[in-house]
Length: 125
Image (cartoon, rainbow, N blue to C red):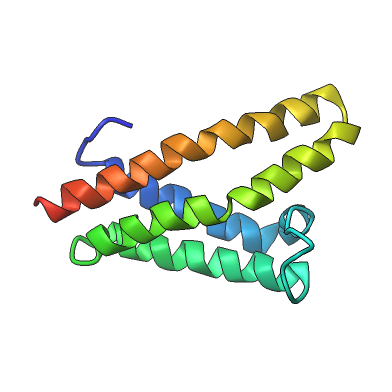
């Protein structure tokens, strides 16, 4: 992602949008929670949505941006197993569903790099 003044706010918006999606349509997220996690999938869906909302607020505010964007990068790495589960489950789905599920896997890399870049540029400001 290019480093522009709006880049942190775009990242915050992406995180906030994902948080809202977790609250509005939790079933789709429940389905990708790895079974190995303790507790029910809905707990993890809501917890990850709450984390995304907190990260969005932190990234949006200049005083907390560096730490929050670094935490967002770690969060994007942490939710990768859910994307792997989604891709594994998609093997039995339609070709279009498989394409979306498989396409999400490499998209985590630019998200992590974007969040790291926001963190680094905030630290140098």
